[in-house]
Image (cartoon, rainbow, N blue to C red):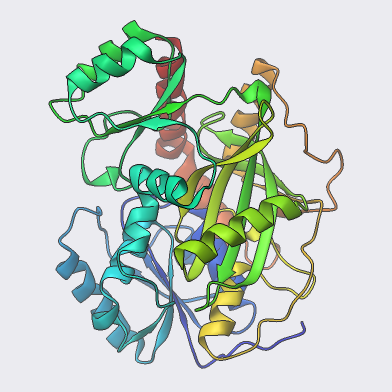
Amino acid sequence: MLFRADRDVPGLIVKFGNYPLHHGGVGAIRSLGRLGVPMYAITEDRWTPAAHSRYLRRAFAWPTTGAEEPAALVDGLLGIGRRIGRPAVLIPTDEEAAVLIAEHQKELAELFLFPSVAPELPRRLASKQGLHELCVEHGVPSPAAAFPETYADVEDFARHARFPVVAKNREAFVRRRSPAVPGTTRVEDRAHLLALARGWGDRPGVILQEYLPREQAEDWIVHAYFDENSSPLALFTGVKVRSWPPHAGMTANAYVVDNPELAALAEQFVKRIGFTGIVDLDLRFDRRDGRYKLLDFNPRMGAQFRLFESEAGIDVVRAQHLHLTGRRVPEGEQRAGHRYVVENIDLPALLAYRRSGYTTPHAPERPAGTEYAWVAGDDLRPFFTMMARFVGPGAQHLYRLWRSSRRAVTK
């Protein structure tokens, strides 16, 4: 290693909602824990994979839904901070946590370290409508979109739309209520759209978006950490090979691929909006017009962040901890050609992609190395805990996601 982390400043994984099989949190615990940083985590219970990492000092079992009042969540965080007993770097793993931290910086600053960002910005970025408006404002390509306010608006859209289209939930915080659609839903024709819209109520909480056909597109990802001047201290690009549910879910398999054009696009956009902190971006390259179109801007650590590490040993979580503790973040090129695999979802994703006949054009044939989400020779217990929870309820949940995505496409 070309650097030393401040071992007097702990890290705290902050997550709200019930998703115990979260490999990103485990990755962050390992990443900083291997540097000797004391690690703490909020977990659903004491039997999550994160709670069993050898690098975790303590798990704070705090089951939440994301629907709690912000004041209650802030009070709970402050209580955990007091139990830790010294300022800790906050590492949110979901939009609810990232938005809460941004909107309550004054209350949390006494006990925690985190990037200072415009309080309203993370919520706007996490919203599909807010992100689309920012893209339009700053000239960043994104899929054409409509935001119907009534069923009549949907009917009007259906008369003029070019199908298929994509329907998504407009806001990020779908765990707080019943979502209008099950994730990303492909809508085949006018009749299908109107049938779906009848179940959306008087005020549809959806975005209707241009469909970018996968046969003419490539899925790319950008992970980065930006300082207080919105300058990147670590910036990485890669290509998504498979996701689960297929073509519309979380990353199951990805590669590091150097892409200077994409890196410049991401850096310019973040500079224009003035964001500070870790970002996880999803973009789709549309070969029909040669443009990268921004689909998602996650103002937080992405679950697959451990795909990316520089030759100096820096990932985005390490970059944040070093920067917030006043240490230099060493420069270094990304490890091009490295692969990331999420074991429990990549096999079903592989089978589904083979059935569809689709492959990612930019996926290297032979990886330079592989980072597994769960298996680690120096920290095996999270893998076995994941397997114990995955068999049964976890596998059934993945199956329901796959079935809902298939029904959405085939209706």
